[in-house]
Every structure is written in structure tokens, then in C-alpha cells.
Image (cartoon, rainbow, N blue to C red; front, side, top):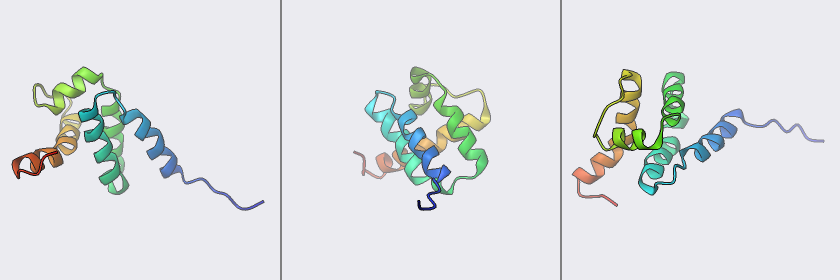
Length: 97
């Protein structure tokens, strides 16, 4: 038998990819993009805050991402900012979609 050693980070990212699927295409895209682009270089604190963000109810998470309300927890608010920032930049620059 070979020395197969599963990559725990890959397993975690795969698990989180499923948790990013919320049933709302726009929200899925925001969360999955952060996971793909930011997770690999994220520090332990950002990773923990992203996982905490995924524990939120879909409607609350959507309101936060749309700027209708803000999380009381400043760490979650900062994570929401990270999640929505790329989309806001593209929309501002006329690159949406």
C-alpha cells in the first residue's frame, strides 16, 4: 500500500464548499468566491470567522451582504466586508456579472 496522507486543508475546503451552498445563487457565489480566493491564504482568525459566518441563517446572512443590516460582532462584520468587497468593486467599476 502507498503512503496516502489526506490533506486536511483540502478536506476542510471541500466541507466548507458544501456549506457555502445556501440555495440562493448570489449568496452562494459570494461565499464560494471568498472560499476559493481568500481561504488558502487566510490566517486562523479569518478562517474561524468565515466558519462562524456560515453558521448564520440565510436571510440574516443575505441582509448583511446586501448592507441592510450589520452583524453585532465586529469580527463577523469584518468578514462580511471581505466577502462582499470583490463584488462591490466589480459593480463600481462596471464589471458586474
